[in-house]
Image 1 (tube, helix red, strand yellow):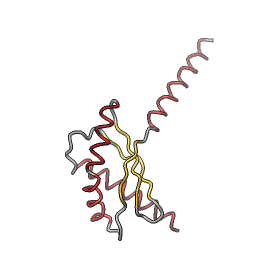
Image 2: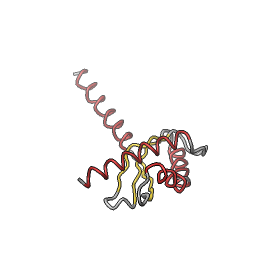
Image 3: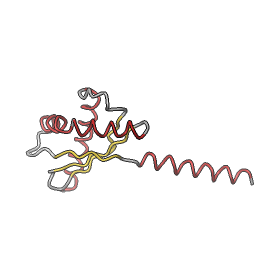
Image 4: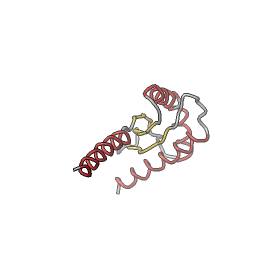
Length: 118
């Protein structure tokens, strides 16, 4: 039962963060950022927010800095929107699964092209 609640809270935080980043955060360093997943600890004290960012390494670093700078504001807004006893402390972690998926896709395409030429 506890696991379902933690998943629901994580999903609510993900949806609220996405809305806040789209409409309320005005930092120009924040590029095209997508919240991919939120992992909440069982005691609901902290949450690791996984995000992906488009662009080169410099723009990704800028997005990381902007997210860390806005963490207090985002945490306060989430606390008022979700109304938990304790609002989880937000930690932002870059999610590179999209990049790894693209690399795997590139390798698979090369393998398929090699099979066709034989």
